[in-house]
Length: 235
Image (cartoon, rainbow, N blue to C red):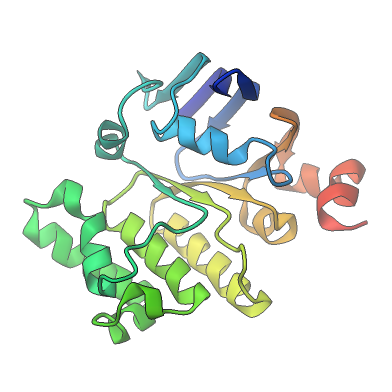
């Protein structure tokens, strides 16, 4: 579904990621692991069109998308859920969700169905539909960010650090929701520092260090890799 080949991306003269190769098959949950600044978010920005590749190729459903504009990439079915959520704090929960459906704004029935699905997945968003997004708790804001992304009916969702700043119990609920979204048919590429939680739901993963992928394998392989365990899981 998504194939990244020898991808290099730069900020000015600084090379943020170099020769990155990733394969995501339809229906999978794939996790990118690594410390802050290792290159996970840069990879996401390059896939979603916010950053142009310096070298390499990105294919989505056999179409070369490297360098396409973000709106074209959303229309193809890739949606990014950013690390800092990027909500509109003064707007209501419902208005934020409707912003996610903008790409399908002429499909009224589809939008209605998507809204029902999001409210079923996160009932608290329905309860708080008229509240300003900025008044929600951290966990609720993360639910809203994911719900807004779902409103665009993505084939592939890029989730950037969804557990950051959340209490352990909320993290557990969040990962159950991500698993449910995947089981309903959305392929997921997840960037996450919480290796334990991420690998427990992922099919496979890639470990970043200093802008390069240093290890990759199935979740079981990464769980049993001693270096990965020491660095990200705890021996």
